Length: 140
Image 1 (cartoon, helix red, strand yellow):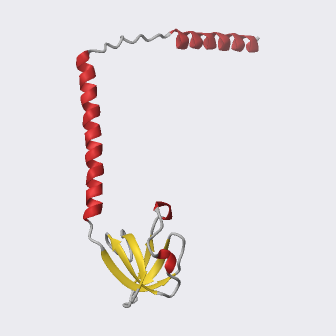
Image 2 (cartoon, rainbow, N blue to C red):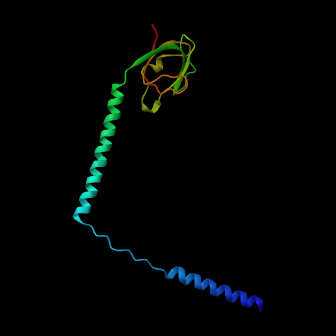
Image 3 (cartoon, helix red, strand yellow):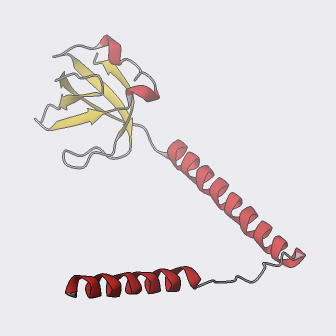
């Protein structure tokens, strides 16, 4: 008897939950597209495109404006993506480049232990190296 009562109560509560969950309908107001709204959206899109172009131009200009510097030392631990350069004052720099961006000029002519001169832009640091390598050449 208790099982039948529990089963009936459970069935009734499940039915009530199903009806209340499925019975709720929301109606959304139709969206009106006006010429004014279209103009505003087009202005926003145009401004965004101009901002992106300006940002790309600024990056290109800053890259061109960077001064090329050189550092010399002995090359070691040559990898496909970089090498270690030890200067005469025993500072070691891990210099890396992106091989997919193109071959680093002169990199294929050096071997472990060679004295080289590296041309770079940016900042050379033992800890947080942000240098962009331009070319590598044997020291004269």
